[in-house]
Image 1 (cartoon, rainbow, N blue to C red):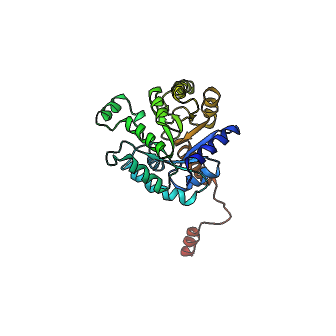
Image 2: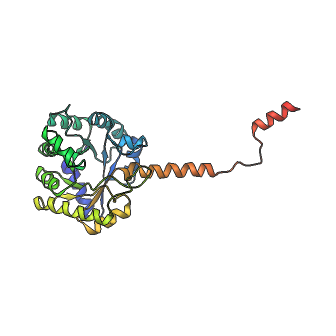
Image 3: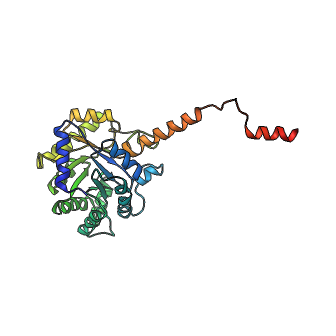
Length: 287
């Protein structure tokens, strides 16, 4: 377990050393282990990661909070060197007591939280309808505020300047502009914004957050930001100092690696120095 001051100190040290912060999505022990070995500063566990490991587009499946809590043991069983952050569905109608929900995440071994699944990216009509019954984006803001009161480290996904202001006011340690579903790979979203459009959105969101808290840490995620070279462009053109990778960490690289390995094995030809056992058996029968 890592407390909030420890995580903040680690982030500050990375940035001061000129190194980008990496929060790597990890929904199974193997991905977590490899991401940590690769230098990830923190691991982020989302229930939606299970859909990626199932070969599906990123999707919310079943009881999100229950699934995320179950994943904690597997991840922490093989990784203890970096903080593990849990994705909290704050608008879960079965868990209206946010303080109790945060206590459960902490007890499971999560050193921090992020508002995911998030309503922020689901469109105004859905947000409005959920908000009418008290289960909208406001619940995510309340969850981040509750985490700050408990001194639990937090990241906040936001999709607009308005959301960024709300989350910065609530006390989120890191504001993460979410600029859309990640493109690329077998089930990525190929249509959508360019990296230039993503950067414009990020700058608008970042400006809103910094108007509330000039020292808030800014990371980036999603949309056209899918590859390492994409993050390089974002770092040059925005105030972001790191990346939160989901599909970019635990889907696209796995797709490429497994496909390449299968192709390599399949490309190895059979030698002709030895005959197939069935051929020998057939010859013996004829004799």
